[in-house]
Image 1 (cartoon, rainbow, N blue to C red):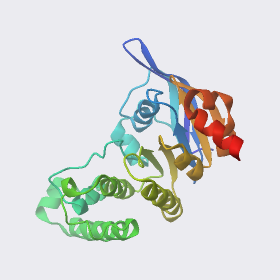
Image 2 (cartoon, one colour):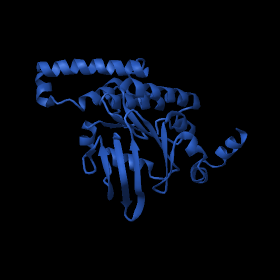
Image 3 (spheres, rainbow, N blue to C red):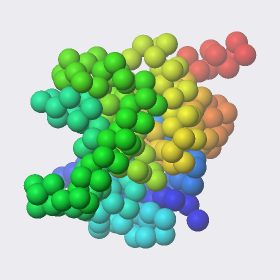
Image 4 (cartoon, rainbow, N blue to C red):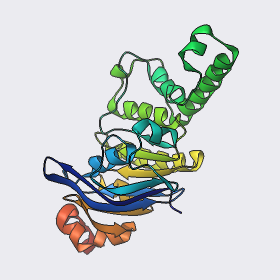
Length: 261
């Protein structure tokens, strides 16, 4: 059974069809890519999967549980974590405290226990800080943790957001344009990091990205959206050479590369 199953999902905005019967799946431990031109519906699909966007038709299952009408908080508790195309961090907090919020999001003590500093609350806070320290070291953020996130370059802010998502202990991590706005060298390092994240945290990933080489080098399987529909799916080699993908998204650059190869 797949960890995530999306069946025939459609989303309309005032008559505009953003998603038109989209289906995909992500297996346990798998990294799946989602590519397509601007306006193809990629972020809308991410929002639908994470519960930030209601759907007009279709079903979504997480580990066999129907989450089609579940709230974003409910899906997060079931193991869906995500990042955003523009990092959604709290500017007044340090990088460390932003990551710590990922642990706090799954805590059940409540404000009353925290306010009284009850023993269970104190123990959980210590455990959370140890977990954050581990994530910080894994992501190479030790030199940045006490700085305000507004002072950090985009690539580091993206890592902070990934760290926060990891601290929610997701089973499925949705990564929205994580390589956007960073250099080619950093993109290669990020690709390697995501491979290590999958192994270290034993999770599945669904990756939206404009950098085609990044996706094809990272993912086990790739879906291609265009005008809200899946126009191709398969392994990297299959997708790279698919005529509809070349026409809709990859263009002459891929054709030239194929001819040269």
